[in-house]
Image (tube, rainbow, N blue to C red; front, side, top):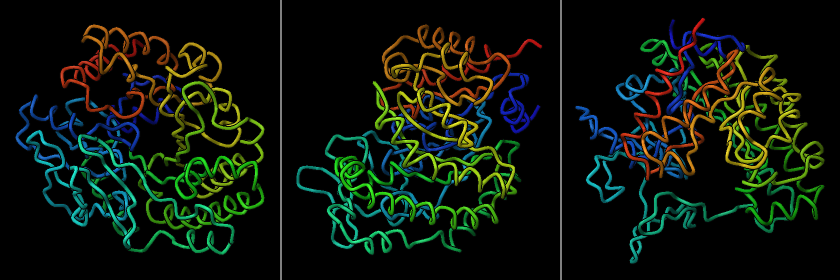
Length: 404
């Protein structure tokens, strides 16, 4: 059975030969560059280079050697943007971390190094991102719609569209993946609404304006939908025939509850999510994947109703997200992609045996009748020892075999 066949069977809620596995199939099932560097050296890979394709999260490109070693069944169709205005179509060496790693970054990544050792990224003279000395991520430092009251400013900010150049980059990449692997292809699109609000207005201001300036935010969300639909049409025209799954993302949960009420989600966000899903289903036969962190179990029925078919990262450590509850209540109607190990406690701080036991326990719950793709809960962070990364995926491969 090929990797693609394995994925497609489980998406139909049928049991393949084993539970499918994902490492690096999208930007929330990846691995931090530091950990990836350690993993390559632990395995004594001939090629020890590490390409950082997501500057904000410092995610490594998972190359074929590692993908095959961990038995990952998926490959990401990556957008051209590497974060903060950079592009991932050209690379250069860069001493990103003081661990002797052979790191590569987008060729147009040119941060400033401050006197205290921090990195900053500037665009048109504005500091847009900061990595403090000793830090491991870039944090956004600029919200272009903060304190804006003129709707024309929204029109200007959201006037950009996916370019012909990027579409060519995507199509060439998709053809290459299809030619050289038998993996399922995840097309990372985006389609964020609440997260884009946080990014462009700033978190606090956007959350306040959802209540205090609702008409302005409704206009923003409608223009955002308009942009996404135009981009989706061109995106699917070029790569829809190559991809198996399209990835949307919007974090509606926190560790304890939703970020907004169910009523507000249904009034302000669900109609836009549904519009994207309806368009995708009319335009193609790809599966629709939603990345939404946190305690989102209260919204899962609405996600399903809107057209979402796959949920990630399945943050089982959040309130109301126990594996047994999720599988019992929603397992026939949505695919769980993630939830494979407790990445907040057990994976970084547990023993090898605890990692193995946690993986087995979760496979026992999520795997029956298909509808489960094994992945860590969000990205594997820098504290995780390479031996635990290997135990995580080796257990999933060996224990996750169906017995039909």
